[in-house]
Length: 220
Image (cartoon, rainbow, N blue to C red; front, side):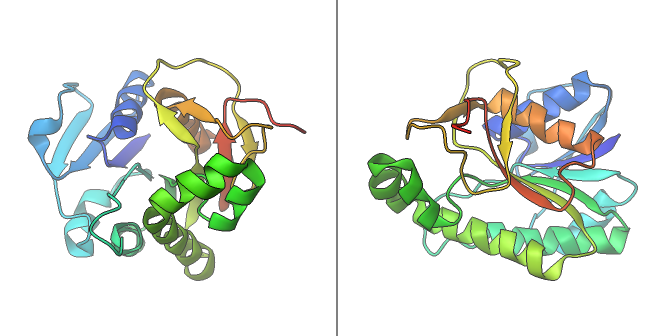
């Protein structure tokens, strides 16, 4: 496939780029600073662009099969607006370029009330710390659900991410804001999440769905 990867210089985005190239895809990485791209490959094109500018994104997205987004934005300054603002620009560019498939990463707890199901640490420590980011992620998700019936989206919500190598473990997937595992200490490797995101491009199972994922086993 011909893929546009957003956030390709981030820790998860680097995994997506490398795994996509290893799988034989052609990748256009849209970045703010091309100097941060350390991967070199005949099927990799690096483009500097403003992810909030649909007119800049449209010619980049054109003639590609799908967009994979690992964009992330810091919790400060507040309010966090990058997720919803970039999503609106990207979706507009996709529409104008007649590209309909996007796989994007958010996180567990975008409905912050779901943290109460995962114990004290999640509810009273993790979510309060990153609430500005989660709230804006949820705005992006709501925008896709309410305003993008023409877009074939998949939202992938992982728990805390680690930098360990790909485990190859089966991903537990739930159409939910969390995966109930019986513990508040949940984590999954970025490499496993990247592999799952790319796998979503080869199946219709997660079309227009938002799923929480983890390599840990669910309670049921």
